[in-house]
Image (cartoon, rainbow, N blue to C red; front, top):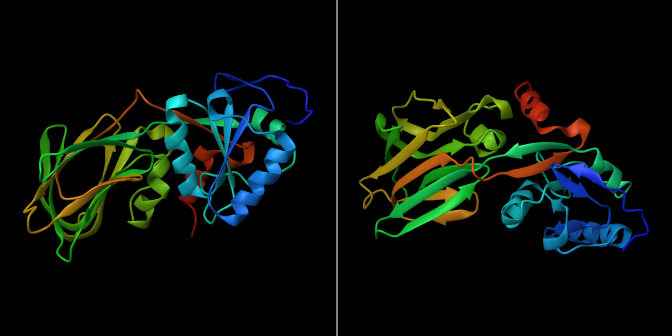
Length: 270
């Protein structure tokens, strides 16, 4: 442990004490070495006793950390030791307790996916980025899209389709030419992936209360997988998705890296 005085701070409704920091690092050499140095400076605390978790890696590992600590309801502060780092703060070993004390919180709500495959097996998973349906073979998927009990697209032929959280709207959704959504907008982007028919459909913005049902047509001929962050279900025949407001995670950002501002700024990147 370090010899810093344990001065309490309020972080996301929890008392923060320097020395009660848990460090999680990705498998890369850079992240492992960074974790070793930080633990030497500030100590390491078991997750169950920590008041904050510092995630060292890229955005992918940040998502892994979020899923791992979700049942513990511990705030997560990311430091970039990876490639993209949209969800991350810049890496520095200096004055970490002070940075944590002054961090600003963003509360993220996941999507809950309920999937059924061709054998009748069911699976549930949470996604803080997006839920996507993707073709498994050379032929396009054929998908019916229903929103709040009303069929909106009777037949979409495509490589896939995804529905994103606001926080995830700058990830796969943006790569698929979907709309970026501010955190406070209470909207969920629904975005096709390489739509073949109807060719001109570019997606939709749905209210965060929407309940979306994807039904895979001609599933034997056009097998389709569903993916919620890290959970993949193969050969699905139906997938329902809705936002789960009963579950949340608090992610911490330095004042100059606030997530809501970065999402807005991303819309003006050329």
